Image (cartoon, one colour):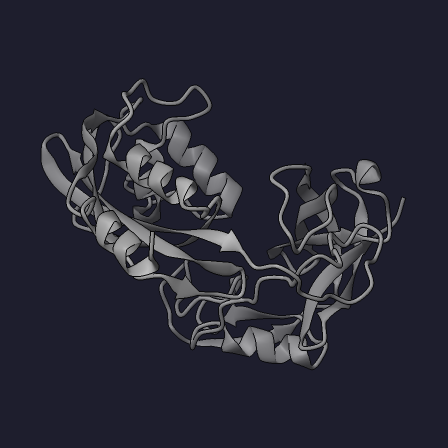
Length: 304
């Protein structure tokens, strides 16, 4: 099947449902709001409402999943699998907030396959971007919209990396995905290029923040200044990745949420120690790791 014919067949799925009248497993509730806020370092809203960015939380199925029959979305992914586009990566999501969610709100939602892009060439490989749109309701009223986009792709062959470093997750079998640099986070990556780990400090309330954002999550001010971290931290949480295999990484490797001494947290790799020896509370020190000729990343070297 030619690529043009394949794309035309994939477009037939556009507008078809991915979920119909689905129901959130739990109503909006205070414990989930509290846990989410604690995990992200976000203050619980004074009125007890759920932070707007929790929108998707109330639709998620959890480890037990949702009881459902295979539908058009499964058929679309199956068609891509059958055509050789066997790998998948989530690329981005967009959210629109219409009303606040409060404890006790019952959540229902519908999802539709909004679009399938023409075949695209990416650094991961060639493939198709599939966008689904979820319309979320609370007590029957529209509460928001969540768009989620994935890339179903055929992995690129070859690729070259620098020599692997123990615990870094680097592999000679592929190139690391490039960070998305935009106007909000460009200063962070400019700092990395100068071997500086920069975070933001609000000029109004002095709250530090990382990752970089256009406004303060504590007071809403848009005034801030960049501050260099000393690079000392501890492992706040971590996972050891074994699966799925990805061409640019050599599992197993440790991915950690590092808490820096200045009170901000950053997701990064742990280097210098075997991944099975990484522990919560382990002290770590910032270093910069060149993973490709044109890419350096901030990582943290652990001490056993």
